Image (cartoon, rainbow over all chains, first blue to last red; front, top):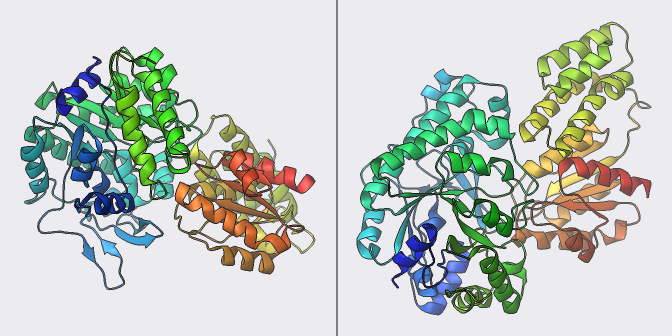
Length: 365
Length: 209
């Protein structure tokens, strides 16, 4: 069975030949693997670079889908500043801390009114060059692998990234006008990008806004329903309007138990990543409760087993997740986040091997 | 409702302007600065902490409540006498080396402050040596270490090892997304808290023990 069919059957709640896999890597892990495998490991220049990079390595390992997404416009590549920091087309400035590039300057950090917001221009979603890489990847992999269009900072997350989280949350709660306007503009920006990814041939659009912390919701479920749910509903409706067959995946880290029904209601069909150490995010329970309506993508613990376990423990983690969610299809095995730099290559191989061993249908778990 | 009760209510609802105005009014009416802190501002944050723990309020409400408390504190703090400032304890907090994530650490700081601790926040990406310096300089009773990443959790262990000579004076508590009580035990921390409100309980328990 071709990888694409395997992936699509699973997300259509049917059993393929085996549980499909879709993992992503941090740059450090990609470098280790790329050197070992003799494959390129450079990251692509994009706001969500890890989701669309390292494709050859990931397919060689056993991924069944390819991530595509918007790159930078030709006119506005990310530039290195004289002090070594990186500045991107949004006006975000990143500095390297340990393994990660973290934002240290946010373009809307001082904004308090809609007039001030008007001084800031989001990049052109359809600027020349934005989809060059996506087009290349689609023509190379279409048909053979499922194509997942990544838009994981759909409304909340890109917006707060431009402002800063604490200021954004306070201004949101105080009902500042510019927040409403910013959310609308960001949603429109990502809608334009998502529509283009669908036109290019994406089978899945992978939306996302992180509303969970390890222990529970970051904001109240009511605030989510009042502010974000209507915007997300519109974004999803726009995508379904372009192609009703496109599947909608949704990513939120952390514990988001109170809003899962809401997500299903607005059209989410694949829930990701079901972070296993986050409170209440129990794949087995969710399979029982929601498994006839949505598929799951994720489940493999990156906060414990994958970085710190033995290869045997990784295999048993994979077995456990497949036993919880694999029955009848509806499950794509994936780590709950990009595989982190402290994870051994042996554990990564063990994860893929274990899917082949325990994930073959009919399941015998 | 008394003036101080009203002040607490405005802390709870996060109205910084009202809190500031009420603190000024209380001072004008001759209310003792210590009473303003202990009977007006802190009780408001205590309520927020309790509600946060049971998901009645969430991160944004904690942030605006803390901002309101600070607006009041800024007015009253310079007026506190030396005896008034004999506070509950000093807590040095920071996010460990290699880790830039600060919202969890900031919430812990707000909750501790709201519970009467003096909080010295030494920031993000803090190497073990800087924690050591802060302990030597500020002589805290509590040190709080935060990490979001599995790749930086290990720097908690390095920090705790460096603080070894001070362990009879300082209790160390840790927290952050990937942290578990088991990990806290393994690296020799004195306490673990799952969230910012529990961090106050943890600090209180450590000081009582």
